[in-house]
Length: 197
Image (cartoon, rainbow, N blue to C red; front, side):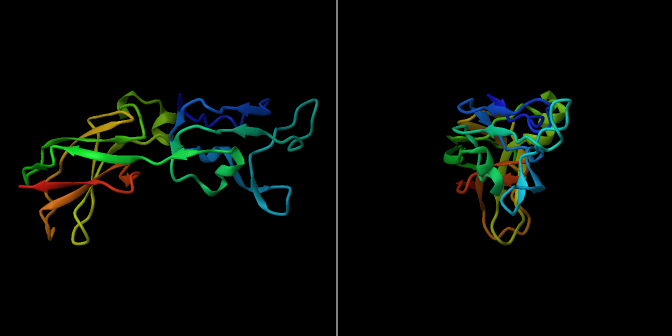
């Protein structure tokens, strides 16, 4: 379990890595794919090849990295098929409580499945800060106001706990759709309605 290591495509001796069914989560690091490399089929984009050594020339041998049957975060990049990667969509099932003060400050718990999991930001290594992001809640107030992001107080694969922001100034409604997100970007397609009272 954990995130996909970004050093897989730069290790000088690693030819084959089968990381299937390891419960790896998060995103596929961009370091694992080079869009400028010749793919050998008349196009561009490939997993970086092995570097030169005493027994081989540079770029002579290809690498094989399999990420099959891991619950990686959707959507996957276009090149994810090079890794046989799979993903699962995060889904929101409920929100408790579903109402609170217009000034914000209500602790809400979003429940669902396949939520991204990360450590609190101050407990992450520099690499985890770069690749895993921070889980939280995205509050969408409609077309008349910008979305508001709040980092999670607590999170796991089935629940995310956030503190509500104040109702957005200029919002035409007293409600917000709450979705789970990473670094301010929603990862759930749908959310639950929170009513400001």
